[in-house]
Amino acid sequence: MLLLCVTGSTAAKDIPVSDVAALQSAVASARPGDTLILAEGEYRDAEIVFKGQGTKDAPITLKAATPGKTVITGKSTLRIGGEHLVVEGLFFKDLGPGISDPIQFRVDSDELAHNCRMTGCAVLGSRPGDNSQESRWVGLYGSGHRVDHCAFQGKSDKGTTFVVWLGDGSEGRHQI
Image (cartoon, rainbow, N blue to C red; front, top):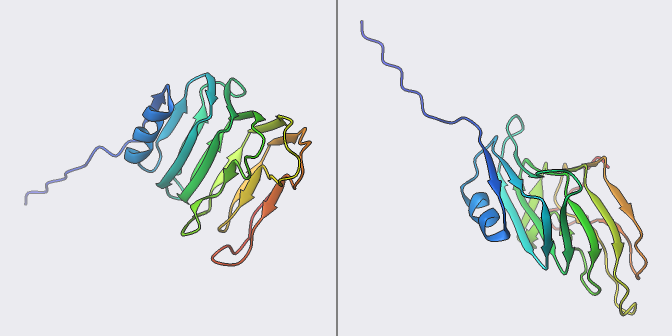
């Protein structure tokens, strides 16, 4: 009897990225268990879309190379969409005035996130600006998210800091 076993290379990878364009390319090819490591530095006015399909046992992770030294600033936004994604160690600082929900657990109203996690991140301070428009820092959409070991401090403009949205596919069941 001949037994033939073929195994594919599905090992998780650490993928270093040094700019937003490289990050978006890495996101497009990321597989469950992969970790995208964003280099130290300042990412100003960056539009980051972290979208993918991880699994419960093998999430796809976007993390800072060194927590607190990967700084997202200015009019930057982070959109998280898909399932079992983890954002770890990013530092959001001096977010620009007029940017509402710079961090959203959805890509858009049709692509919500589910079972994702934000951990070890900080959102500190906002630049003074026109206080007539409401802004929020985090919009939690979808279901089953976990936000832990994060700091939210120094918001001085109009609006709430953190909003859990319900309805239209957003079911809650979050751990904060």
